[in-house]
Amino acid sequence: MNIIVAGDGKVGQAITRLLSQEGHDIVMVDTNRDVMEDNLQQYDVMTVVGNSATMATLQEANVEQSDLFIAATSADEINILSCLTARKLNPFIHTIARVRNPEYTQQLYMMRGDLGLSSIINPEREGAQEILRLLQLPGVLKRETFARGRVEIVEIRIPEKSILDGVYINNLTHALKGRKVLVCVVSRNGKAFIPTSETMLKAGDHIFVTAPVAVLSYVLKKLDVTQKKIRHAMIIGGGRVSYYLTHALVDAGIHVKIIEKDLARCEHLAEILPDEVAIIHADGSSQDVLDSEGIAETDALVTLTGVDEQNVIASMYGNAQGVAHIVTKINRTEMTGMIENLPIGSMVSPKELCSANVVQYVRAMQNQAGAAITLHRIANGRAETLEFVINECSRHIGEPLKKIRLKKNILISCITHRGKTTIPDGNSSFELGDTVIVVTNREEPILQFNDIFA
Image 1 (cartoon, helix red, strand yellow):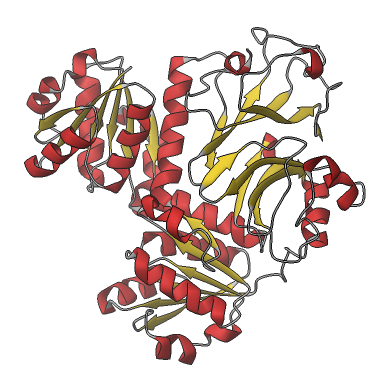
Image 2 (tube, one colour):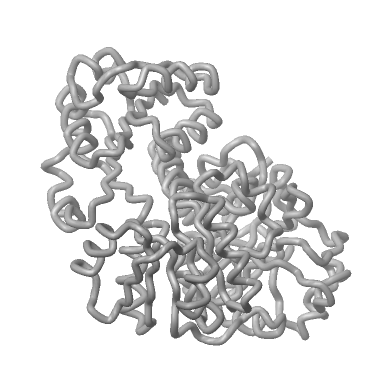
């Protein structure tokens, strides 16, 4: 596909990296010539220097022959105007705008058609929603939901002396007292792989486990993963992610304290957030500040400053003070391999969440029938989980799985049939209308359900 990406910030670069890896022809547009030259060397893309909201720049980027235009500059208004201009020049082009200002949220969804927007992305809001999901299930490092909430895949780190340390996959059900779960992916020493029945789990492994929600709750309790319910949360950093997250936490009955060092931002937050939110004007990277504000007594710590190193250090200090649940925002995902085993709790990258949603949209454009309805990247992007709905074009309907050949490094992890979710075995099959969860760590993308078969 021919795709134009306008804006060369963190989100624009993340989108470009993922889409170029999937073989699309990318044109990047930005006003910064030096940055464009760096990208020309880093990625196999074309570049255009200019304002993406002008017709001349978009025509130079060949918008008339493009399939998709993504506006991800730092200015919401430029993104909206760019999409309007792109649609004017090419009425058939799909457009995606990055819009972060919460004041625009309601009217944009009402006016999407008038503005020529196919989709809207908001990394900060998506990051806040991901953090909320993690805080609702304390103790897990990652949490992905499928099949309208009936299926979850959670990331767990196996601690020392765990009942899973030294257990082979084929003995897992016995170790869990008959509860059937599936380990979809194991992340070990910076590598992610789909385990076989002969794989031995080890302390320090990050495992991605799936099961029906009721079974998963039992298993997490058995593994001493689930912590007490969160009643107090401390947030370091008062940016947009904090704004969205705080509203959600207050609605959930959780008391929130925000520590922000910029006075003007504190005053603004005090105006737009509920009165019960405590806003502290102080440096959240200071040990004295954290101690005086009661970090040792809080149930959850969420570090959301714009500096990854500050987030990591504050999270490590929170862990040392016994905070039960910690979430750390990471912008530079190239760091994750170095820090994934540090005691910083769950790692969340808003730009990666947003980029994965764009990739899902692009794959659906390529294959309208049979495309994944949900896509999540796990194990720091080294694997994917995809949700498909079986339709008339799906192959092997009604056939036992033991008779079906899948491509290498692909696993069918769950099948939901008429609202009931099962972990499949060789005798299981899928039927028309079923939801099927597929896990893969292949480099080649899975564009539609039939791509999983050999």
